[in-house]
Image (tube, rainbow, N blue to C red; front, side):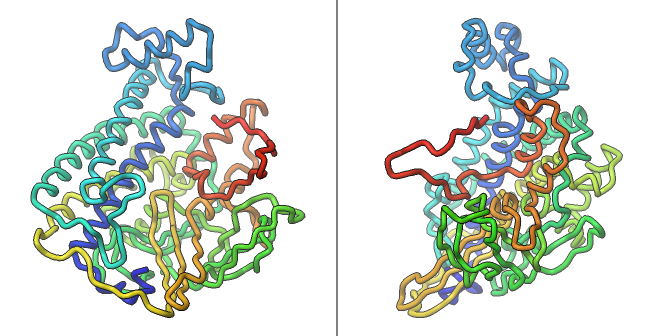
Length: 452
């Protein structure tokens, strides 16, 4: 809407920074959520702590909970820890205990990040303070001090718990540096504006820059938003295929022959691209960002690995953790750059006729919105969201999406217990809500899936 209202280059510094602080808090909670509460159970044997209810104060509540359910022989009592796919758990007993304790601690860290965001956003999730022209919540010294105090506690957790836990998992499962490579092409819209005067979102200075990179050469290429298209040959839509999102159509056809997904197939220059923390970090790395290069190089050196190892299950987890640190560290300077008493937004008027584009990276990856206004009303609105990129079906040329490519050829020991697939897919942080789901008006069951 900044773009459509003609104010994209007029966001006050306070508004730009407050937006960054709201989104930064969201990044932190999202990355902590992903590792500890959405994927850690793929690698951590939670049931191994059942015998430590009286031995480890950090585990008393969760160990007692697991022990009671185990003694009762009722697995339904063990949610969210069970049911699950059973993997080849490799962590030592002590590391399992430590990881479970950190699982519980991470719940409080996420709460803290939500509270930190709410200082400027009003509530989290679904904040109400980010508006066209900037933000609604003006900074004060009290708000700045409160935000900074919470941020420092989160930084301590990221540095001393989150990153060491990711490294511990990577050391035990080092073969996953060679599993789940995906398509080998990475795309980032960039995120966290460092200046608001540039109206071209493909060129605006950002903490994590825009661009594309290929695993074949790790060379940075500038972003060209005109190259984004969406195919629908294998999607349940009868819309036009190969359209730029600004001209996009969303016309459902649930009976379309050959289709197998409610997701369209976004493509860039006709090619398949992965988006997300790995894409952002590698694009910034290839663009010459010294801070990112040091974080990545130090991590690769720890494992004696080459940059190619980043294109993997563990590469995605490592990139997410390092990005969490990068963003949290940068946020300290942003808080201190706020200027109480100065404006946080610029005035605007809804135009009668206009078009606008928004390019930004959500925690899960590249997020694009396109709006068309006619007679002062929205006549068309299209979104291409991160999980649409990563979980897209085959395009009109038959090219599978990034996740499909990542799981193709995976060796599965037991088809009824495909934990190998789960580990690969979850490394992308898929969003179930980002695809359309179908139910019949009377609630007739169409299919049943076991989700763990």
